[in-house]
Image: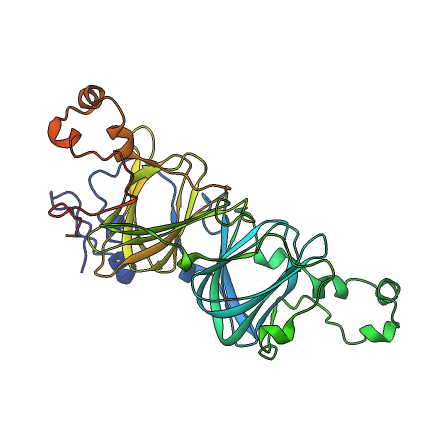
Length: 384
């Protein structure tokens, strides 16, 4: 049974009521590293602690500022659609960015100039819909599960603008006048928002095509992230996606990071905005450093959301025996990070030595090239 006692003898046994399973999942909360100091807000929340919204056709759950108060810039929704399950025709006041976790889906959209978009997406694919652009998502033969990201921490997926909700709250004579059909046409319209509902699996995409006199959208709403050539380092890999290679995505930037066993996402920070993380697989620990000696360590695992405030230094270590995969997501049109190693390497050596009281052993090991994920023979991290 884990006890809140550090190896140096600090702490004491906990013999009172406690959640042993939770303590085992969060060893660095029970026994914080000696380098943790000061008061820092919570920066981790699990989707498993978020309530499920169950519907015929799928489910959803969300992590917003209501669940993770520090997460002001980004909100996330985890959604599952059955084969044929539909996230109804709708639109948002926020931008929507998505990562397909498993399965396949069909997405549709129409832009403000009447140009349409219909595409099938699979594991590792992304989509992005700008604010106000109407769209839909439907599970294909095996269904699908995906992460939705919105550029506003206050977002709620239950407050979106839906076609069924608008129809239900519009008089039938108004609908009749708008579409030029009898009021009886609307006798069976839904009485409330449908949100997610069950339908038949759609046919092949060619059979669902809708000829558009205005053509398709000029910038694709989908992106094949796994088709990108990754930046590979000895400790893992990184794929970066932002407006430079996914032009429509001008409000969300992201990186898909792999950290191999014994490796770590290097000490770094981001100069453009807060970081919102989603852990896809594996286990790890994230340490965040703020000003005035404040630091805190959080244990993370698949299904968790992590958050790092703007410009706070941080790193992520793999604590398991399999690769740790996670997404770094930003409310920005560009991905940007500052490497502590690279900064020191490109600063006058004497200045670094005088600041840190270090010698040539460190100075000559510094790298001018950035390695987002690091692992050195003989100096790798392995949990004790």
